[in-house]
Image 1: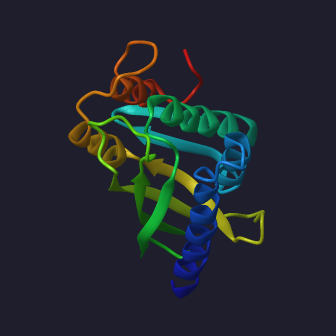
Image 2: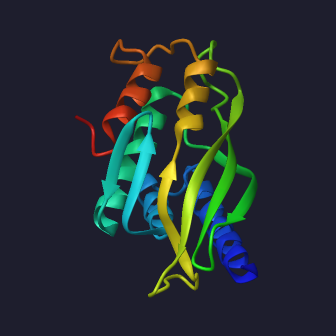
Length: 183
């Protein structure tokens, strides 16, 4: 199972690099989303706060990720998400569970009641792909971002939003209904 751990760690490194693009103001969120979606295998499924969101193909993956990043920006939280550390647990010769801890670093011009940043851990199911892309041997089959949204709920009470709504409710409600666009 040494091979699966090595392959999963390579995917984590590639994904961390892709996620970091979202915090670079010279790169569009769509470009960052496309880089992140490169790790999503066909049929990827996201689990968040009781919501199950399927991403059946790359187009929907890019669209869903871009919409989620845009919500973070509109809420005032920003999209500067930095890799902190990871753990890989091999499940079989074909799959592993990856625990990735990220740090959301809020903008300097953030609302007063928003902390400068906090860490959260998302969990990803890694699977060796039959048709690897981007030089990787596999990608994400599923993710669970419960901790990410629970930390939002713990950390932020309410941020004023330009439309008069609470940004936290805006971001979390979007996660609950799935990242399928801005409805």
